Image (cartoon, rainbow, N blue to C red; front, side):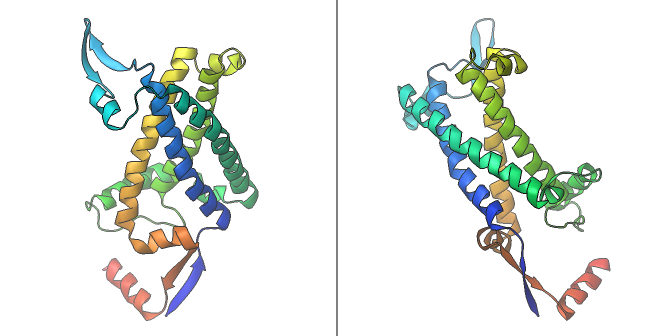
Length: 230
């Protein structure tokens, strides 16, 4: 017997699917800006051992000499990114969804068990409601990272007018490093998130689109539970 249950609200799905292309545009346009002052590398005694983005990378993706275009896109979509983030935070607070998202005191221990299960080291999956412990931590961190990106981004964009934000970041150069590190964090999150989507399967992915999931109820579930216990 099957039962249809709502899993993700329209507001949550809207924020999720709108945020992905916007953040992608922000990262792409940020690369166009970063090219103009590509200063982060590992250099010792005047010799550069490692650069995050070598020259061939810029040429291959046609990133060179597009600073003004990058700034135009970055500062335009920045406001949409902020509005979407503010709407998402307000919705989770007003609707009470934050209870499902914010990690609790057991989350960090259970997140380790989730990792072991995903690596097929542990057979039994840890308890999960709407989100598991690892998802709670990851989704909360992405919100914190978003706030950090806005603060550090404004500190770089208007260091004089937003001097208090620049001071909060530890200065202009520190704000730029924070912004850069957070961007790398988004890319890392994207990769892990997409891998997890493939591992979770179509059923989990479709629920993020439709908002509903199909649950198996009845004898099959009881047999599966008994087999899991044994």
